[in-house]
Image 1 (spheres, rainbow, N blue to C red):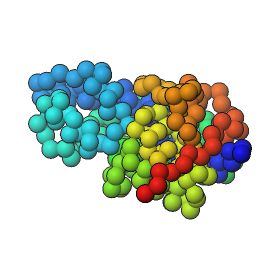
Image 2: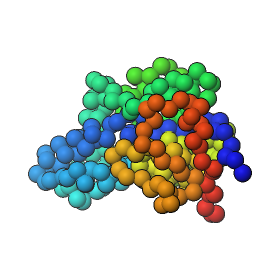
Image 3: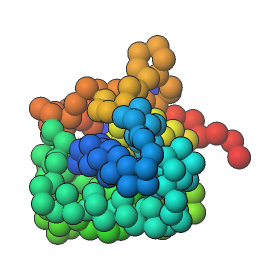
Length: 230
């Protein structure tokens, strides 16, 4: 059976829409150094796609940051938000596809582990109404890799998850989208993604969104994965 043409796009933000991961890495390094410990790039990459409170616990345990988890999240988010407002690092091809989707009347929902202050900094660089809705990490009970964020994104549109297409760059994000039953395009950025024979059902991996038209992106959509039985 041929995959159905997606009727909505569910966008991850960090590393998919905007390449904020280097900003997060820098903020984490600075915060850990402030508390007299060391933090490697591998440590930073291990947090890509994590829910932020979970990442804060890792920074406390592995990085020696002697702050409450909420304060860690607020400190990191403020640092990254300031950098984004100064110079938004749009991922190649992502902004162009958003504009094309908006022009074609294809609804887009932002589904991100980041919290609202950073999301607002990113949205400030986009035309009003670019996203039909926004699901942030501070409004869900269970963040990525749990399916709740993507189930919420599809629900906000009144769509079955199988009729949407998720765009993701992290393993936690892919896990979240696929567990929600959303066909997913993985974009290789800062972490390797499973591809070829090692790719799970419902996933197709590309190196970049750059140069893809909206029609080409939609044509890449794989068949919807089966949702795990509850």
